[in-house]
Length: 175
Ligand code: FES
Image 1 (spheres, rainbow, N blue to C red):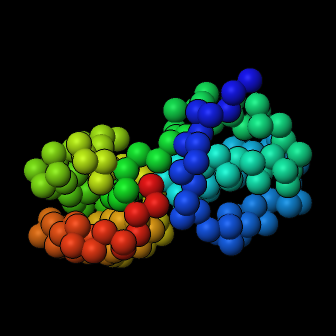
Image 2: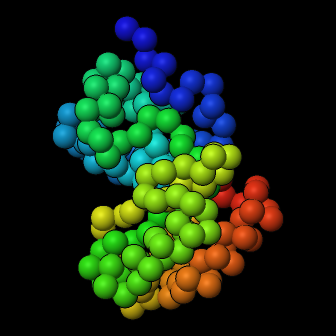
């Protein structure tokens, strides 16, 4: 069975220390029960489930690659390929939703021409929603760009942040 659905050969930039920090939290868990929450954390950290991480999970938890592949492709929340160089993640917890996340989504659409889960033609940007609260509602609305979290983000500030990344593409960029 081929497992090349994972982004083969393009796992550069995946920091093993970050992977291990996630997996270390599950060492006491039953492997089958740990698999989905582990993959959720991996997805949040890297924006997708890289093949190298799947291999590390398989090795450390004795879970067959076929099982990881099956879970990753069965649940639509998981992605097995890097979508774009940079990811804008909008918090859509209740507080952020009522205080501006939709306006920020419209700003991204206007600025980059992409809606949720779309990728710009040059594969530089993708926009995703976080269906969970970041735990920083006092700073709503919250936006995460390439793992950096920003609070009190106005449409103008979001445009500035996008332009800053465009000027310095080495910033972030692991999605
Ligand atoms: S709802 Fe966005 S940080 Fe709580």
